[in-house]
Length: 126
Image (cartoon, rainbow, N blue to C red):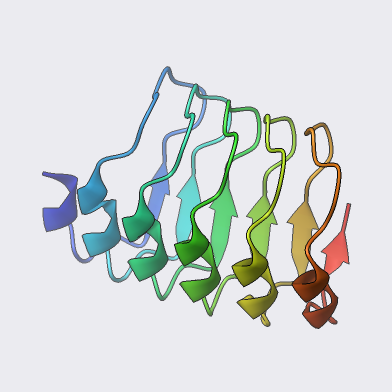
């Protein structure tokens, strides 16, 4: 399974027809960049939060409606790209991403941002 690729640092799977990620994605402990833009992903597994070394998570142009609470465990995340999805709300745990520098949320269906987003003081949100 993909989880056995424990030394993998970059995984580029953009512009495919991926609809979901395996739970074993969380076993990629050395992953720094995960590029999954332009697919058909509807949700992320809870295990995504185990990717503690992840710095770039690009999920634009998918069909994601909701992020798992575990997204807040990605303490080293610098860039989170979520534009052009179907997200209606962000989890409160988004505020735990204190190292986040860029968060793109354009072209979603978000009506309200969580209060915790104020904690992202070094982050550009667009």
